[in-house]
Amino acid sequence: MHRPFRILPARPGQRPALLELAASQPVPCLAMSHTATAPANAEKRYTVHRADLPLSCPTPEMALWNSHPRVYLPIESEPNGEAACPYCGSVFVLAD
Image 1 (cartoon, rainbow, N blue to C red):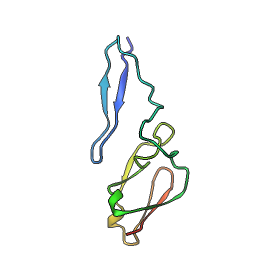
Image 2: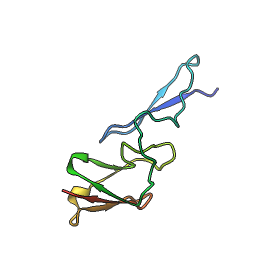
Image 3: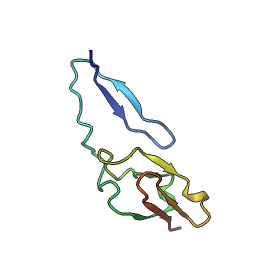
């Protein structure tokens, strides 16, 4: 028997969690994001600030349903203040 699951969003430094839903509960649409305001990976170069750290790609403002898994990028330890996403190749530049 198939059991529906819902993926709970991950916070910085944590892994996503699976939540088993009861058979009577409707399965929510994972394609809808209430916090996403930008398309995922629409640009190839992004400027970020220290207030945005920890840096992840896709960023929390991006829609996750059409993107790759979230990966955290250690931009503050990079000598030139730039980090590239290993999945999509987007380059993030630390402005301050």
